Amino acid sequence: MFCLHYAPDNASMIIRLTLEELKVPYRCALVDRKANAQRAEHYTSLNPRGLIPVLETPDGAIFETAAILLWLSEQHNAMAPAPNSPERGTFLKWLIYVSNGLHTDLRQLFYPNQYVGSEQSLQDQFFEITSARVIENLTHLEDLSTQGHSWFNAPLSNGSPSIFDYYVALCLRWLALYPQNRAGWFDLRNFPNLFAFAQRLEQHPTAVTACAAEGLGSTPFSAPSYATPKEGSAT
Image (tube, rainbow, N blue to C red):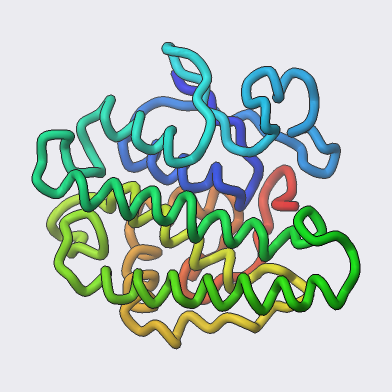
């Protein structure tokens, strides 16, 4: 059985969605962010960066969201183009684009003090630069979502969502909610294809089950509200 070290509405949610989609047995271990448990010695022995998530597997602990997703998809031959597929290269470049680009930009938006300090004028400048880069990233994803790839925004009647689908959906969710002091700056409806994608995906049975487990509401991707989890905190 896998063990997912998680905090509600963190990047671990992408892994939870994937585990649910794969229908593999797993259990969850809460990382209490209120108590800064991600910095505790036990947790940093699993992930030296102290970031969430970590997935403990029979082959050892894996950290970094994209690495966990790729490992799971390869182990189960599902939710991504196979290594010998002609689509594999394009899929990989966009997965890393989201992981190293969009997801990294979101972290900078949400925790500006870690990058430019506490001075408000510097944070304001940093927000303008970073948010513009996020919008550029989403413009590329809006276009990508219309190109007919089997691993992004494909009809769910054709099979399961991909690991890329779930990764993008969670990024869209967080953009609507954070940073809390600037909530409302982002409107997904400005990207109609991504908005429709989010609406479809949140109705998928796996998404309904996983999102209910962390209290993400009935429209977690297209019109999100702050999580009301049974345990733990998103921040």
